[in-house]
Amino acid sequence: MANAASGMAVHDDCKLRFLELKAKRSHRFIVFKIEEKLKQVIVEKVGEPNESYEDFTASLPADECRYTVYDFDFVTAENCQKSKIFFIAWSPDTARIRNKMIYASSKDRFKRELDGIQVELQATDPTEMGLDVIKSRAY
Image 1 (cartoon, rainbow, N blue to C red):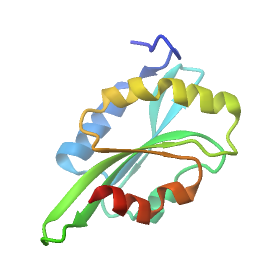
Image 2 (cartoon, one colour; image 1 turned 30 degrees about the vertical axis):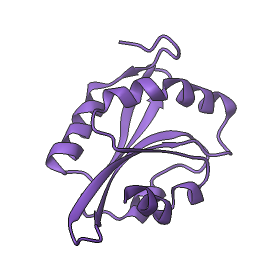
Image 3 (cartoon, helix red, strand yellow; image 1 turned 60 degrees about the horizontal axis):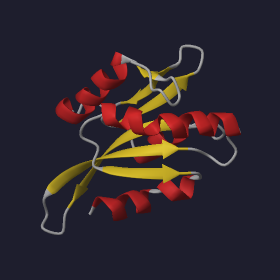
């Protein structure tokens, strides 16, 4: 089913991988890419549960947009182990305008396909999604 605004469908693998991250915690993060020729969102990379936040940020291209989901583990002030699922729309300033427009127009529909996102961030450079930002939004 394509999005009327951008014509981008969501590959079933995207929803499957997200469910694995959410329910089974079998992934630390997922990077999604819009495949323009296929007119759909696909899974580009899946991070293993033991990968770090630095591994996650290193997997994002410096000059292309991506959608990402990151499972952030933290301990509360009450010493409770918790986790929050972040949706990050990565849209670097150096990306082509067309690339930014396609990702912006497809974001809401894609996000609706991923039921269980707790925090959303929009980042145009690495400082807007630094670990300190993630921590401050998690609590």
